Image 1 (cartoon, rainbow, N blue to C red):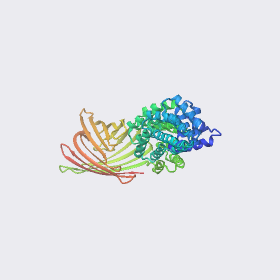
Image 2: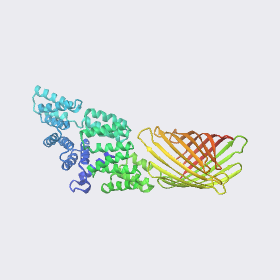
Image 3: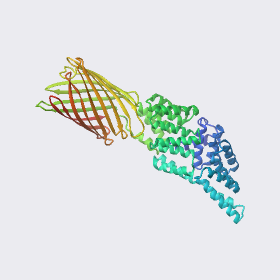
Length: 582
């Protein structure tokens, strides 16, 4: 997305250069440097000079700006102005070899081979693998040989013209890598960027690009190394600093990312990209209102910023306003009609707010006892993203008696890391189920690293059941850890129950959940814990398993089996169910 935005802004810069539009005036030196460098790589040298001249006006002591300006002027054959820019850069940063290489090119094109050789050899001494400097030194040697054999005044000029990269190997490889990165082919882009870094060791732009492509592949340690290396070369390189913000976000370190982006905004309050990242952090934290305000503030200044449009759409979708989100996605698609990322957002169907769950279980009891049945019908409605209310009716039969229980429930996610629920249930004319029940629980994601391991969830559930002649309280804390990008989850639960007569019981349950595919899931486990039956605590040992399969985005089928052992009988439980979303 960014390269296209860079091109658009560069064109707008040319159109507004006479009038000095409000948007152009708000650009920072770093933004102008980035756009000017892109224009030079694309061989739009006049645009590059215009952008970089403005960057120099805003930040006259920025050596990166001066070097890029020198190369842009050199491409337009303005050698005196190019020399001045390179010399100013070296005065600010004496070890800036790119500036010295620029002076070597000027000396060579002017026919001063001795000076060109001296400068090129100095560059190679500092950067032995600099292919462009080595190529220039070869051209200098060829020109010197030709001059000795046939001293014609125009030989050096002709050889220099032939030696001038148009474009250079470095520029060609950068263009190839950038195209691959835009297409999401990060592994291939990384390979080319590494080759480019060998051509231009210590090139801060290449180091930042490598940080982005390695980070996109979750090679977060490599990404951080590249961004820090770029900052060693250019301590206030904005893209490198923002790269470290991205690494923190990729690692799930929202607090660290917030601190880093805050420091960037303190130094560069007008940085659009920093403002967008700050908004993304707010959205990740679940502060949707703040995120909307931050994205909108960017759009007030830059109405055609694609990333801000997408961010605002994402924030609106997070509030459940799918219609408003689609309006902003379509605006972004007009600006970038070939973007698969935007099209994917538009292809995503509106969220389904209703869910119906239907299930039934039949229990076959040993000892000649009659079967039990337990059926339920539930209806849930999403009031807003993160908040769901619902009701459930349960019909259970045991020993020829039937109880009908009605339950109400509310779930609310306070953030991506913390959620809770509450239930209340009643059974009119109860025979064996609780006459009245109240309960609730919470889940807390305490550890969520980037990568295949994690997160870790801690949960706590509690319930109080009131029967005819007693009441029972159950408390059940659990820990669940995920592996293989959340494909496998392992849970351990402790179960403590006590009635009002002072009888208590402790037990446990272990469970594994496996997502074999995006649609097919399995679970299995074992428990040794009490069951509440007519107010009494009955020790049971149960092995259980089940499967669920998404036939479509709207329909899920479930099946389960459990074998339960009690002192008085054993029980085989067979269950079927389905869920429908609309």
